[in-house]
Amino acid sequence: RVLLIDLDPQGNASTGLGIGHELRDRSSYDVLIGACSIHAAIHATAVPGLWLLPSTVDLSGAELELVTDSRRMHRLRDALQDGLQEQAVETPHFSHIIIDCPPALSLLTVNALTAADSVIVPLQCEFFALEGLSQLLRTVELVQSTLNPALEIQGVVLTMFDSRNNLSQQVAADVR
Image (cartoon, rainbow, N blue to C red):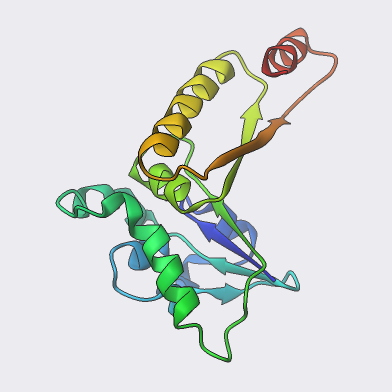
């Protein structure tokens, strides 16, 4: 069983898995601010074995709400650890947890990196992609040195790759 945590305020992963806004009475925002546990907010999806912790636009304000919290960068990791300890019989045990992050580097991304064992970076084959990758890799190194020394980069997945396009080929070559 797999849990997908949607940490992107846009909520595209949530919408794409059929969890409409009207079903998101509890979300990753509520988990991050401590209003509920992970297990109280997850939804089964139409995909067998896939569960979702949906997001809402409220996540956009989480950074401001948590600014005075000394453990603001650990909120997701703490919630996951607490959720695994108090796991109810009727809720599933997850073999894998995938965290979908917003495209911008923010407190939400740092929370994901602090909670994660490893990182897979989706990279769009576009002009500024390598600059964004460079910033992300610096952030990962900072998280490794201060918050999560066990964090590993598993790889980069090229998206929107077109072998007929010189820019796509150049981005792929530079990533290698």
